Length: 264
Image (cartoon, rainbow, N blue to C red; front, top):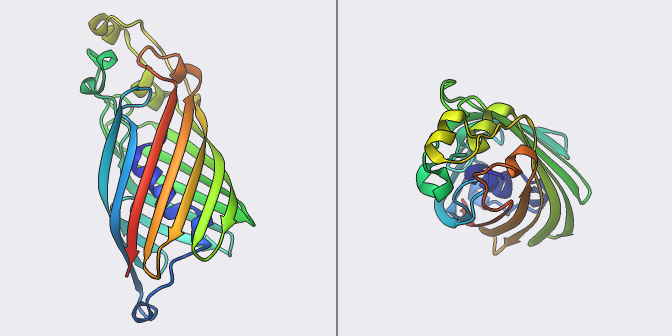
């Protein structure tokens, strides 16, 4: 399941389908090296990956872009982007990774070690050809190697098709998949012998491989020259060792993200 800030990043900043219908820049800002955006984002998602109970989170959306390549964002972190022609781009970012597993998030997590948030280094790539687009992000957590999942890595892919693209409205459908290494997978879904003794759940080992597959729909609407509304809904299905974990209450994981922002 795609974590909170990364989902918003894919939704609000990295899709070339949206970038093909950008908000017109104010005349005063056209000659400036800076582009500013402010707004708010809301997301509904399970409390933990594999959980049944949903939670709703709100976050400010503040972004400052300098000379097209450098970005500081409450959603995407510290980012360097480089376009490769008209249809491709690469990015490197340092941002928080909010995958976590806390005992308070569900009864099946009682007695298990806490899996905490950590900073992460992310390498992203985008490609678009006509209505077809591909997003890929490789994330490596930079937390403590002695803690569960502290140095885990995962790769996420989105393949989509733009059903409608105009100066005001963009609508797309697509599929996504997540691959995860054993360190991160064990931290999120694994149960050690010691944890099994404390929680009364059976031990469970998680190896590297396919973590989830799913589908999504996203919409971007330009309200006027400054304001933009974005919505994204997805449903991911856990696979492999993750799906077989005793901590999983529901294999199908829904997510809804909404954002309203203004460019300056």
